[in-house]
Image (cartoon, rainbow, N blue to C red; front, side, top):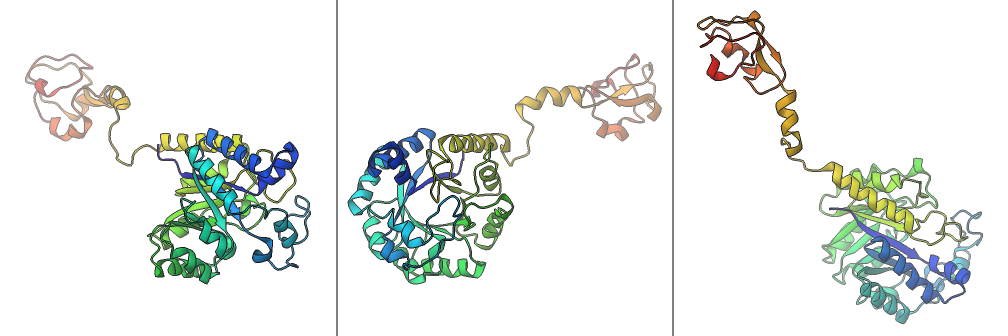
Length: 345
């Protein structure tokens, strides 16, 4: 199977789960990793930031205040910035022990530096697409870089990729993304995946999703059909929890459905090579046509056009040889409705 590489963005959702379950954030984060591993997700992703370095104190909210009532970005980030380097190291080791890759999106230089030895690749947020000095800093580290490109023009994507390549970064994944929480289906613009594949053929293309899950996880399936090699989506254990990333996240069942869809898509897509499959051999023989006599014929009699027609099965002379057969003589007496073979003429 050639399913996409799947990233579960734990983000900071586990903090809300910790409160509900009355456990520590670390315990909740590990439960998230456990559940993701059980489903078959490839990578557990977190976020590394400090409120004082990511946002000014009066930055307004840009999310649905009915779902997440915190009115400033600073207040929201302040609620979730208690993890330190040692905590991410513990999560990295735990995810790797579960057979999963690990990464965390750095939002400052300090986190970019300490994450270097813990992660399998860097993930750059759409919000830092124009932060070229930061992109340079990350690109210099020689690690793969996955970069989301929400709320951007193609020219800005090109600038970011040039910045990475300038410092020697060779393994790059660009993730189509719509920076809107949640993204309405009509705004998903999944055809941008095709645009990115066409305009940036030397990097891999994927999709970072903020569309609320539907019953069939059709959004992710469509992204895969359009060529997304990497799929990233926020992960939660309870989509009904208040918080910025629960209401558009997928729970384990949603991811399980998506993975089943990817497997089904691969099954039905099959091969690009046009051949006769083993399962078609009998149908090919019995459902195709052969040249069949429309009357009884004597040995030596010349076959005229009105003496033959094409009928099933395809075990005799193919109709493609009609003009070759007309004018030939039959070599023995043949009954009406005889399927002609070459030894009869």
